[in-house]
Length: 254
Image (cartoon, rainbow, N blue to C red; front, side, top):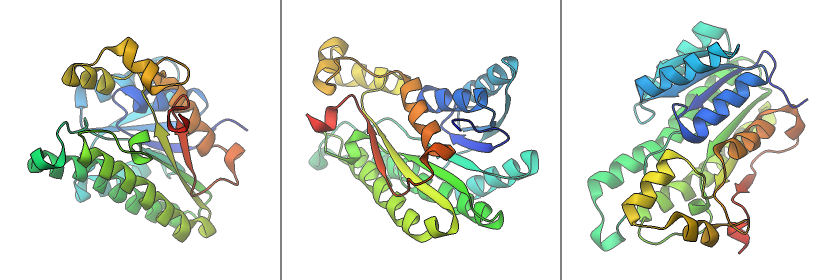
């Protein structure tokens, strides 16, 4: 049952990191995957790599903050593979790095438009298509441990990621009865390009920081988040909706 045989999946932010790992894992277990990302070069590489390994994948360039582009993403998915069964809305940009009194409002607007508005737009058009098909679908939205407890000096990111959890619960309340399960995954410190960039940006020591952020004393691999996404998109989680699952090495329990 832990497979997605003949399912069609959209994964946003799939050019690298957790999105890439999720897309690759979904393809390995039988899904036809849409690699949705703004980074055309890396997104195409992800799709090419999946096909090279015997999977099925197509790259579609999208800025998830733009409604027409998100609408086009879903339409192109259906044109390419005939339907849409699962989606992992993962696209996000690097957290801000100043407290509220010093906030860069231009960056605030951009971050909110991608990390929160982007989730809302993706759900809007994914759900419309899933309803046309009669439900029995699954959506996973990527929040963060920052959606569960605040971190210092990134108020925009904390606000957006809290909002993702609220948006997911609201959507689950409206559409679970129609067969569309909608859940949130909250990754902790995951060893991705975004984390590595943030460590440099904030001048943090990776070894010491990993011990602060995990009971396991290490950063997670992107594949460990992908496995949670797969479970939530598979029939093994058939009674799970409106849930918020932390993949954080115990950080939020510390």
